[in-house]
Image (cartoon, rainbow, N blue to C red; front, side, top):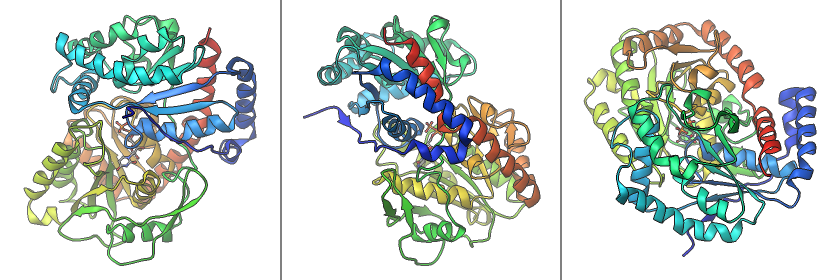
Length: 471
Ligand code: UDP
């Protein structure tokens, strides 16, 4: 049985970006791609990660791989497999790199041996695909152990880390020590923020590349108010039956939202009630429980509106073994709320069987929100923040990880201490009560994302990386 899965990322027309970023930025991008062409001739750029759906990395690969192809670059995406013990171990590592001890970073030779064995099995297939001279971008801790195999096969290896902690600590350093043997001596390293870089990596080999959003993906494409309402009715979030609403797939074909979400709620909200939304994986570091308690204690008593906590269906995300447990905790916390507050809180899980359809659901929910929360305790970058800002929504986010990189003055609200439920609640409450402030902040948010976090900027930074690596 094959362990590797090739993800078919469809070619996306790069020309479409010009309407968003303007002719100057667009021309600069084409020139950078043109300059790179001789260097990449005869080579494939491989992206390797551990999931095709769910989470920010999969989200970005879908679009960047597609745009890369349209720029004439041969670029492919493969996903590794592992057993539950492997993903439990890499989740511990993930938490450790974020500075959270949790189940702890993997320690001891048995765990290292298992990590290496799973990746050796994947590498055996990968080295049949990758040719000497090819470039390989390995994403996140799950794939770091592939690096030695690929280097021996003659590939140029870059490791990209999408996570990290604002400060190094004994916990993060222990996580980094686990990865160190696999990472030493690579040609390049990419981090979302400079502060995430472990102290022993050579600074000259590090590139800082923050993530980006794609304005034309099903997640972010424009959606009329009518379609937003229709999607929300169709998935069972609002009352009322409708025909399946349309969206554009990444291959350019039209799709329809047909599946339903699983909704835990005492009642469905009316279409005009203001919604506070957090969309996240069911991960403790996203603090869905904190949002629920902050809303119950500091928002519900003093402002209208309801809270929706939305995440992927927990059965489907293979590389996130904690998802089901965290979701179950949220359901218990919801059950324990006083009845009057419980009637204003909904838990929603979205099917992930069709990733474009799932994205269209998230799009509609973000557009329907009056205020978006990202109350993470730690955050690699937090693409959900840029997604909501692009849609003109005011975001109340914790000042952790990449969130302060995205929320500039006047474009959202940063809460300094992520554990401070009163401060979080006050920021949400003020916005829920003030539609004019929401509107002004949302407009500034949209412009800020256009300036800094659209895909052309991301591709330009990759172009700089590839002028350096590859021999
Ligand atoms: N997401 C999604 N469906 C869901 C929940 C999340 O498509 O049910 C997406 C979300 O829109 C965002 C990504 O998953 O694009 C999460 O990325 P982020 O950087 O916010 O966090 P990560 O999951 O990578 O920690």
